[in-house]
Image (cartoon, rainbow, N blue to C red; front, side):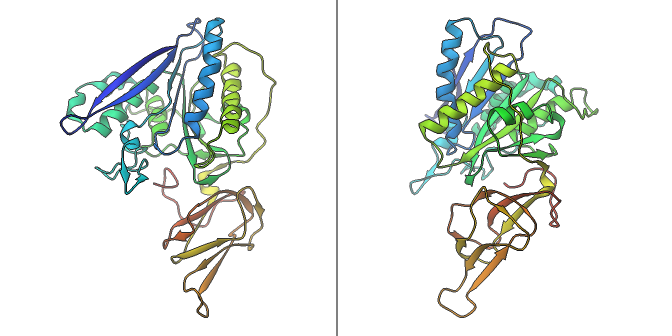
Length: 352
């Protein structure tokens, strides 16, 4: 395993950021190559724990000559966000300086312009230099996996329709309970990678990308960071690497059995008013249209001081907020459904 660091100079005198990059060199130039990163949202650590244990297996495989395709791993992809706290709370999702989500505003370029990402880096602030370096690393691989997590959540993934159903092997290997098929219309990291491949010929869009993959994996919730889950998920990602011929080994074939639905089929339950939220159903529950899901206590102790929220249609509760004091229009749940939501949705990702 080769370990190197990318140095990202800070925007003020005397500061800099170090981005460790781990590389395993493959022995077969025809084998697929993969880039895996975690903690782009700096407080989302299940992926970092997964990669710690995965690298143990990869080092063993390397010593036995079992690495077929090049593997690049960035286990902590956001040193800038990891250093940003406010009154003791980590602010790893939005950059305190620009107020931009660390997983948005990645450059949308053609793969033909790959090299330009790291040209004239001094012209950009540190967060943009970080994003350009990460995207540059990813576009050197055939397969790209961006490891995130949700709040309280089942295991699921955002996968561009251009990679489905070929990517069902990843969903099966990681025991995902749902797949959300995205339209690739945002500037999030995995969609910026897909954009570069789709527009390999500038101005011409490819709708299918065989042999490629760019995916955001949501490894359950923020608090699901423990050795048992991390080892289980590392084993799942190992199985995927075996299936794709990146490492040598044997694995039993499995099939993905969960729902795979477009983003339009995700109902987002939102708070009509602020208050204390009382949940009646949990993640993983299957609910029927009209079923009571949550109560918002808006004026405690007063007549009519609460609001009941019901399921808009049948579905699977995929995520739930961990907050119990919620703001008006705050997201409470995501529910995966068999039919499109009646609510209007802008193209791109479900949330900021």
